[in-house]
Length: 172
Image (cartoon, rainbow, N blue to C red; front, side):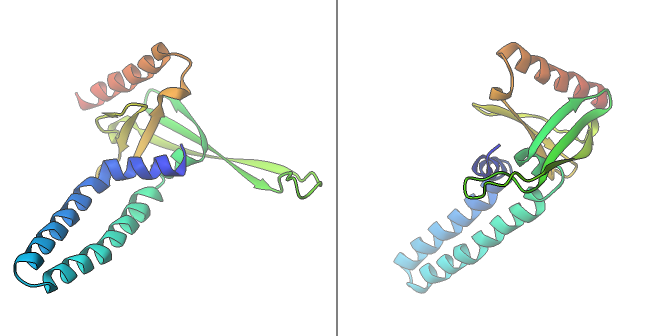
């Protein structure tokens, strides 16, 4: 998952409501400024330009840096177990070979595992290129399953069915 795609999914999951509210505040302020006094435009612009960066920071800090989200942007494998989803993340450390430096450095790969129980996974949301499963109660992260990660559509459907089947078992 690219960083831009990660930011878009976070915005689609948690940022639409704050953005809509700030847009309404700005439109009402502009309308009041045109009809009553120009100071309303200034105050509404200040509210938007001060609060919008705070909302972005909150999304990044609370959701983007959460252990249930950041694995989406690093190399990882998902393993589906009877009790949940095991996430194995791969971090590289050391010097990598570059065009400017002809020395071959040692590259170490560190594996970090995380586990998400089935009862922590919420109802999925379908997008044109992927399916997103919210994680946590209250929701604090997500599992992103892109269509491109599967060999064919049948493999993709089998994983979606696996998620659905295990989530139904938990909720009974």
